[in-house]
Amino acid sequence: MDILNKVKQYREEEKTLKWEGTFADYLAIIRERPEVAQTAHSRVYNMIKHSGLSERDGRKMYHFFGEEIFGLEESIERLVEEYFHPAAKRLDVRKRILLLMGPVSGGKSTIVTMLKRGLEQYSRTDEGAVYAIKGCPMHEDPLHLIPKHLREEFYDDYGIRIEGSLSPLNTMRLDKEYGGKIEDVLVERIFLSEDKRIGIGTFSPSDPKSQDIADLTGSIDFSTIAEYGSESDPRAYRFDGELNKANRGMMEFQEMLKCDEKFLWHLLSLTQEGNFKAGRFALISADELIVAHTNESEYRSFISNKKNEALHSRIIVMPIPYNLRVSQEERIYEKMINESDMKHVHIAPHALRVAAIFSILTRLEDSKKQSVDIVKKMRLYDGENVEGFSQIDVEELKKEYPVEGMNGIDPRYVINRISSAIIRKEVPSINALDVLRSLKDGLDQHASISDEAKEDYMNYISVARKEYDEIAKKEVQKAFVYSYEESAKTLMDNYLDNVEAFCNKNKLRDQLTGEEMSPDEKLMRSIEEQIGISENAKKAFREEILIRISAYARKGKRFDYNSHDRLREAIQKKLFADLKDIVKITTSSKTPDESQLKKVNEVISRLIDEHGYNSVSANELLRYVGSLLNR
Image (cartoon, rainbow, N blue to C red; front, side):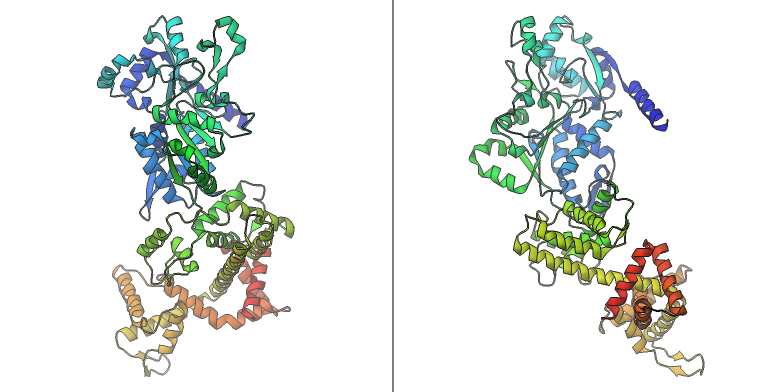
């Protein structure tokens, strides 16, 4: 009954939101709340802004797209700031078709769907309320009732600009039903809905021979001609085309550039003048955001055709490339998996990450800078700290290829291969190696991949495998080191004692003999080398550690094992290097003794409890790392 109660509650809420009154009543509403009379473009922009805004790494993050679109912050910011924002301010941008152009499965359709679903929800809020002339099939703006010769006065009084003319049908209704009294015309609140064809329209191209222009602009109702006497009587016309129904909201053209030319010419007048021709009537006004999407090859073909120049000048192209950040690509796969029936399958940690690494590598362009290989570039793009590089370097890399990410492997292919790995293995668990193997096998079945690209992709799978090898060793390293946590802390304290003596040019005293000793340079270097600290950089690193210790002391805090990330990593690596033989024996022994078995079980428990593995994937990880260490 819970779901039925919620449906009932939703129905009751809708009743409370409904409103009906005269045009005079409506004027009272907009006198108090002028924002109600906003344009379609303004409504979309305010909807996005209403969801909230934050900043990350100097980029604006629009919360409206936060849980659905990943890794496209720059594209989204450009879309909002260069199109929606100026269009909302009635600048000339609003007289352009918005064309999202990018590769397959790059997020274009998702963006449009989010805008449509968002408008549906926004129209149910006070901020996004939409009012229309009651009984109008085009849900026409009530302000069109204001005669044109009074609109300047209306603007001076209300501060609201009126654009567009009263439709032929409502012109007739005003005369016949209301005797010309605009103050008596009934107005109602409407709720935008794609399903009910209120304020949201969608047009898809089909066979040019069978598709009728009436799909866009409506058609004559021949059954009523005898009643009304003429085809030019608006009551004998069905105002049910997609352009009619999308009025006050948005119109989506799917694969617009594949449409027959006769459909596209209607957009010339609609975008520039805000009206279109239908039947034997004067131009019909429509206030709607027109958004289309296509791929790059279709777009190039379109602009190369001279016949399309007029329409081309009325299009604003927004490139929507693939995501280029590994961490965000992982989120895309997680989202797609959570929306499927594969949620019950255990996907081992880092399985999606290696798939993401492979995908991102296929989309990146090789930098012209010799110091930046493609793996470093991938890490920099993902926000990782790479020694010798800064955020300025990242921005310079992006400027090398302004539309980077228009090619490469699409997320759907990866999800298909993950699905294949699950089916093939026939167990409720897959790991990173299963995913990489499936990605590799699938390249032969991918018809659109050339032999040259396939060779590159095989190399990227090898790179992803190497990345995983390091991740796997580090994962097991942490699990083993935690089992030797006391040893790690002791090693840390020993290192800090030596660093303090080195920086202060002091001697250390042996705790057993009391003998004075110089700082143990061999010990310090064996730890520092684990994280790439060079001989020249060792003094600066040690001084940095000492400054951090002093800063903690001033605040009354104790510098411990978790106080410096890089030092902790160095200690872990050093301890793991010292334990490597133990790990090799423990992970590869076919008949482990009691102590080895106990240690393995401790590590497996830690992998399960703290790292997200299950018993199957944890054992597979240990066996794999054991084989790596034995090579």
